Length: 499
Image (cartoon, rainbow, N blue to C red; front, side, top):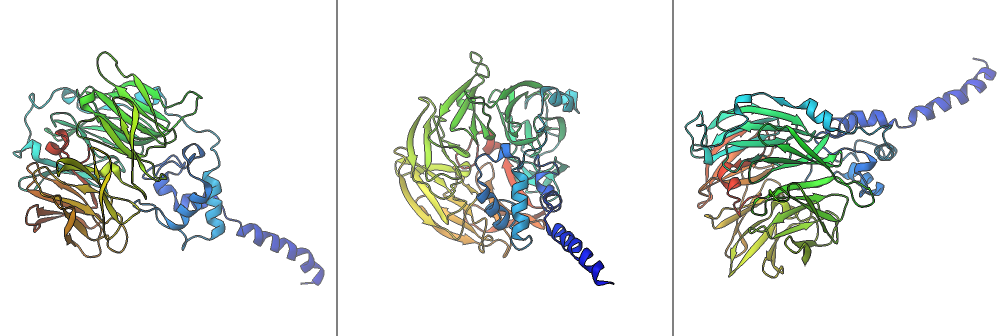
């Protein structure tokens, strides 16, 4: 080729090579992120990745999350997969607003509503009998995230009763009606499902949002409240058939909006409590007849990501993921009662309590630090901290058990489970149920005699332990059983499990 042709062609070739080397963030997102965060960035297993949802996440932190992953989540590290330029382009991409952020309107909610079993929308435990022989109060629901199914398990024989397909990526744990007849599930993409535990049938479904956190059921079984990341709303549904009742926009006095971190029912108070991701507020939404669905705003010193009730439901103990300590809020006075000596990332949503030395102790694992913290709930002072083999996600016990169990959810020792003596606040045994595989999430039978443990893997299992001798009793293969929920322990608001 003549030199003059090369002199013309070479700059073009070089410019094309440079252009080709520029990362394509949209393509990278579809390849590496869409499966968890949605092709449209509106969230699936993972949260929506939009500027509106990233108000409290600095771009530097986002770069670190993509590079190194996030502890105690399904967010993997991409530092060995993508270049620095590609990661930077992804960070810029998720902080770029969509041309139009979709809203999930009242009409959209109503249009999504389906009633599958009209004859089952009403009733309670007195109007039907289970189609199985097991004690309906000692039944477990096991959420199998590996293939998006739920197993119904007999808590006396540990034999499966039924298995059914769930919505994709259930989140926040199923919530039972007060007698255990019905249960409600929420998926990350906003679908709410009502299921009849006696007839083993899906009753109704509705999509209440684009990215939902969890649901709560009122103590009088009238309402289901859905907390959404996107749009920034609380949605009230009729608990009978999941028909739309009301949308509560989550906005402040300046018109700014916030994601909802979590919602829980405070049955003794006839209210729901909502933690907000982007406001320093906690909302109490009453469902008492005299104050139907009224919102009381409780001001906070810091944000609240998750929280824990005391057994009387007079206080909540919570922490933000970026805070240096926790806070105690007196729900009656709507004032902060105390600060808690909790650093790292305490998982207060997994906290439990038990009687200890004339007081009641609150125990919580930590998602970052290798500790369990014990706090006196009379003066809110730390009684003790003990070292564990790694960060813990779940802690559980039962009123009839002398032990509390806490997992080591990440790190080289993710396959162990610590057993703590509730009288001495010391680890008395460390179990290794399946070497090399993640152990997590204990739940007890109705009487506290047995403890069920998850092997949190695709080729996982439920392992049943004698809660006194700590010996294995039975093992049931399951596909990534991420949580187990005993009817009796949930509806009686056992101090040993989440509410």
